[in-house]
Length: 111
Image (cartoon, rainbow, N blue to C red):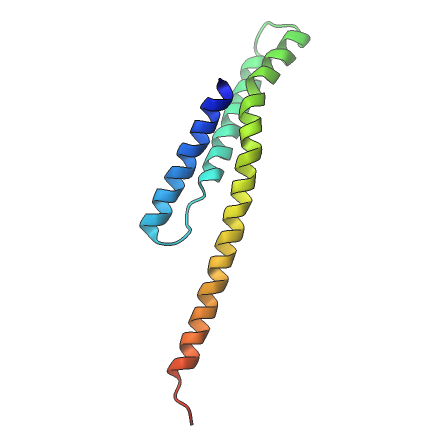
């Protein structure tokens, strides 16, 4: 059930990124990066609370693994989307430069 909850959080983050990118009309915001930042904050908080608990080492490891595993699985999917966004952004910049150079060539008069 936690896996579904964290998947929903990922989809919300991706949706926020898509809305921001549509408003800017170019790739500006990475929603998967937002999820990865939230995951990092959650993991640090989980480790901190586990470390300060009165559980013995086996119980602490079990609780920590049970706490971090579902968001970690979704974080692996988010990592794919994070790097896919970066390649899409690089492709967009390349296409923009090609269009710009083509426009400059068509504007210059032939002698």
